[in-house]
Each structure stands twice: as structure tokens, then as C-alpha cells.
Length: 530
Image 1 (cartoon, rainbow, N blue to C red):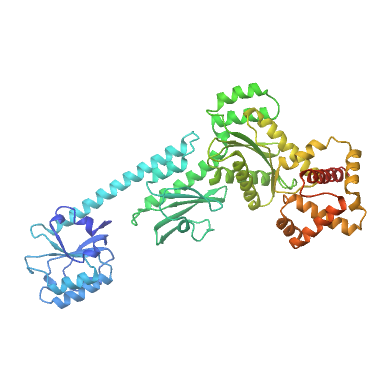
Image 2: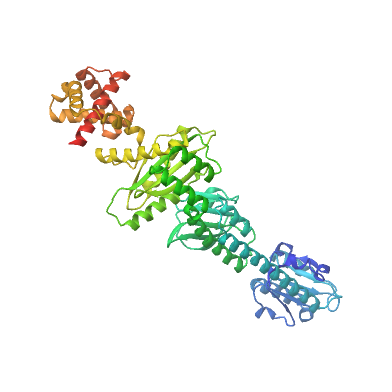
């Protein structure tokens, strides 16, 4: 039985009864019903048991009644129903006062109904409640099964799980990011104690009850499903549904990451692969793209290629790592408004982003994507990965050019031994343009410009060149350059002043800065060739 005293008093014929004391305990749960025929009945009372009595055993000893009331309360009894009219005409005031103090429900039962009438009503109501709960659970089970086997690629799978469970839910990503939330809990309360162990638990918090179920994929935790039922009395069947929902959600999250699982996604992947590998003309590509995708227009398009840093790692580890990166990108809250497609190509992962028209500019989106890749790759376990990012393209057919920029950036990074986690093609574009200049011309340019400095002592030359490199790397910010060199900002200013005097340049002039920048690019290219 699982009814509160308050719910029981709504059932006929108990609806004719009257709660005369202990109203603040009306939320006590009735687990069973029994009749009392002895003053020491409290020795056998179970927690949650409701007792019915005619008061025969204690009709002449109100003080014994008080003692019994306290004992019943200590044993966790749900309440006491007394039928007046046969032995008592009214309940003593001292009993009512004590029951109010203990918040122990005392009910005045209607004389015209037998105990069996009232007990049968409780049992019948409990059966009906359990039957309804089982029907609800069965319906939820059916809806979960329908959701599990549906072939579609709906983006609102979190919402559907929440609708099936009919409780507020929160979906947490592997890095603690909130992917979906219908709860009114504050974020600090939701993520309290993060990071969590990958185990299921039930917790009572100041904000309410919370069930935590890990989302497991291939033996690894990829997040958590939190369920916050408003009612503390949750049936065990519902708890089982929470676990089933987590299993189904894990499967769908893994399946929906791989767009090959859908017909439209598979077709789009094939079209992209053929186009990026030069097997299709731009005109044919646009024609097929319009047929495969509902919407292809965007403010700009971006290509990002992610590759392993260490080639000698087992292929299974590399694939596993790339899939983790893809998962983190697809469910990153800052990328939810940007359409993306990830495909595995040339021993790496190519990610194509369609930047939508909106309040956020293309440059801001590019900055956001760059920052997110830095965070994701920094936290990725071995084998390590790095990525290169193309320049934004403003026509869909230009994504092949963006893909080629990624490959070019990888080649330049390898040649120049650049080990950044995230590399922008725009930072290496000069290298692409100038690599066709004859080596002798580059050598002559560097010698003519830097000769006054290169004639100094080797230690002095190295120190000054490192200072200039840090100055350029930090976009002319003195403080940042000083931090990189582990010196005071005044030291950087002093060195730059000496360099200006030696080379007869003015670092405040754009033309002079460009000359020095070219010299450093040429030096990098020459050193890479050597």
C-alpha cells in the first residue's frame, strides 16, 4: 500500500471521517492497515501501519492512551482511527493535544461503517493506484521502445526522453557541460561535486530528489542523465525506466553522432567525400547538395581537419580518440547553433561547419570554433591530436578549397615543425605564397636586412632574434611577449629599441614591420629546407 493519510481521507467511506488531531502529519504514508485490540499493540506495529480501534482497550485509562500514542509515533505508525459511539463519545483533549504535538494523525471514524468497509476502500484504492501506475509505466516502456527503434535522425532526442519519463531531466556531457535541461534547479546545484564517479545513485538535496544515471558507451562514461522527480515516492518500476532511458539515450547519442546511420546523412557523406577528393565538379556538387540537404545556404563555410600527433599509435586508439572529439564537438553547448558535419578521411577527421546568418559575425564564430577546438584537444587523452582550420569560405562549392587549405597547412606545419594544437591557415598563408620564391633571393633579402644584427656575437644575435619572434607571435603586445620570454616588459622595450637602431627600422611603421616579418618567414622556409 502506498497512500498518504490525506489521500485516504478522500476515499469513501473514509471521506466521512474527520481528522481531529495531527493535521501536520497528514503526509504520512500508509503501508498497511490493522485493527487494535490490546493496549500494548505498539509492540507489533510496523512502520507505515494505520490502526483502527473502538478504544475498548484504553477506554478507562487516558494516560495509557498517551503512552501508546508516543510508542506508535516512535515505531513510525501512519496514524490511528478511532470509532466513537460505543465506548467513547469523544476523544479526550489531552490525547488531541499530544497528537498535535507529535504531528501524529488521529482520525474520528464514522460510526455507521464497519472497519472492513473502510479497510476494503483503502485496499481497493491502492490496487487502482498500483494498476494505474503499472499502466503508466507500461506506456512509458512502449514509448521508450518506439524511440529506441525509430530510424530517424531527429535532433531533439533529449526532449523526447524527457517527454517519455514525464519528469524534469538534465543531460550532462563528459566534460560537465549541460547539454539539455528542463529542471528549474540552479546550475551550481546541478553540477555540485563535479566530476562524478560513473555510477548510479539516488540523492536527496536541498533542491529535491535526484536520480543520477551514467551514460555509457563502449565501457566508458560519456555523460550523465539526471532525473528530478517532484514526488519523493517514486516506484521501483520508474527507477528501472530511468536506467533504460539512459541506455537508449547513450545508444542514440552514439548513433546520431555518425550521420552515416541515416539515409540522408549517408548520402551527404558520400557526396562530400567525392567532392573533396576531386571526383566531382562544383556544378555537379551543388546540384547533388541541393537534392540531399533541405538547406544549404549559410553566411560562411569552414573546414577543420583533425589528425593524430603520433602516427605510431594503434589505429584503434586513433579512431577511438577521433570519435571522442567528434562527440565533444557535436554536443558542445557553444556549437548548438552551428550546423556541422564530420567525416573520416585521409587518416583524420574533416569537420565542415556552416556558419548561419545571425547576430554573431563570421569572425566571432571562427574565434569561438578555434577556442572550442583548443579546449577539446587540450583535454583529449593520448594519443594526442592537432587540427588545422581553413579560412572562411562564402560559397558552398568553395569547401574543397577550404579542405585543400587544411592539407596545405598540415604540410607547412610539418615542414616548419610547428607543434601547435590548433593552427590557422591564415597564419601560414604567407609561407604558401612565398615558397615559390628562389632560395637565393630569400637568402639575399635576409642578409641585406639583418646583416647589421647578424655581425654581433652569437648569444646577442640569438637573444635579439628571439625577442623579435616573440614580438611578432604576440601581435606586438609587449606584456605578452615579455611573459613568453620570462623577462620584464622594459627589457623587451630596450631590446626592440636596440634592434631598431641596428637595422635602421621604425617598428611603429607598417612598412618596416612587414619587411621584418618577411625576413622571418624567409628564415623559417630556408631552415625547413635545410
